[in-house]
Image (cartoon, rainbow, N blue to C red; front, side, top):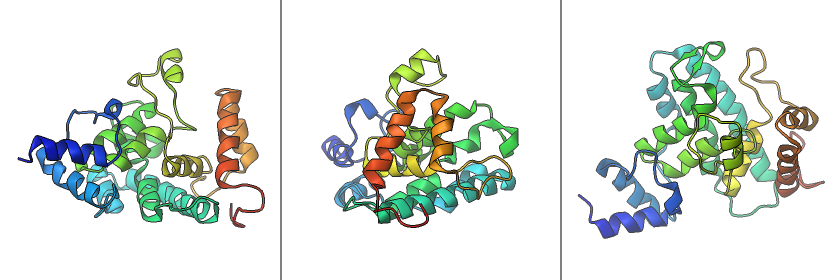
Length: 236
């Protein structure tokens, strides 16, 4: 058992606020070793194998796995292109790629026949389920990307006002990596026949407008933050 002081230090070192306690409470003793190692490396979570983690969650559901993995690969490539073409510095490209590949791991537990997934939870819950899965595996920073990637993020007001079946807390991207993955995800759909089809910014604006002009405004802010005029690579 790790001493409480060491456990507390490790938890703070990975940059998680007290309001972001893991879904199931404090991490298991098994996963504290991961957290301490992460803290020792400046909060960078190492030894992550996204494909293996996805295979573990999807089990024998090969069709569901392939849909999610193909989508996530497209998102990861887009996220890397955004990160490399942005004016932001000191971005952890390895983390961004890993988190993008894992952002939809919670889909393994939702009910969405069109995605060949037959769990019990509604689709809107795949973010919090992903957080739960990755926290249990010992990857709390990747877990937050899962929870915060829905659209341009879900605010407490969104959740309470729409009576969504989610915990009432802020679920909007905070770090640059979280915003980059969420932004990249907006360009792709998991719907059949559209996995490799990239949406235009105007298509994304139209999609977001259904949820309010404020969502479009956030999207515009992200474009300005990461893809200011003249800085974007040609494939953005």
